[in-house]
Length: 283
Image (cartoon, rainbow, N blue to C red; front, side, top):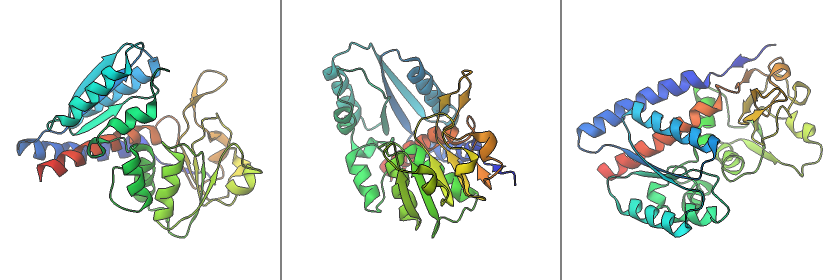
């Protein structure tokens, strides 16, 4: 068996086309969706992420505002900017790029963003709504994964799902989303004993731990759907995921590559959240 690849670039292009159409229609009615992005410090990876998000906005017809601060900026200055954006009715989404310099309490910064403009889905109120199965802004990466599963008609209800990783950004919300769709979910992490015991049972395996190629083909159930959220560098400096793609693709039925898998969907779902926020205010 050789797995069929889930093409995140192709799906992202399709979804972004739909977003652009809806954004154009909303703009024609007098409300242009707008995303404000705050970048603190000169972390090269963060700068690339922000540049990609701004470019995605422009292509989708979403207005973008970018606010950059030096690494040594006082947190109060950023809090003041967030308060200003919260109060601006023309701004529909606010994103603070992580990580932040050591003088910041990232949790307090994220909590300062209005839940109605929390298009990253990181605010405690939105996460609480997600846990309750109520409408909220979903965290972008796990929502992108669910979109991929739906597009590929992967049966989630009744499936054995294993999520490797327990971060607030991916692992925990991913588990909740799968659970809410009827999967039986196991969450594994650095303290899990006999990881392979769990992964070999998974009909759906989501790797989001940040360790290059740690999931190998012999740890995967034949015919499983493998979703690789990891973004790492291998010993040669080449981008790779948490899954050893070469061995895993010979066992899985569906698999996401790195790059070109989950990554493009993360920004796409950020655009979708921003659009939805704008549509709510326009009603």
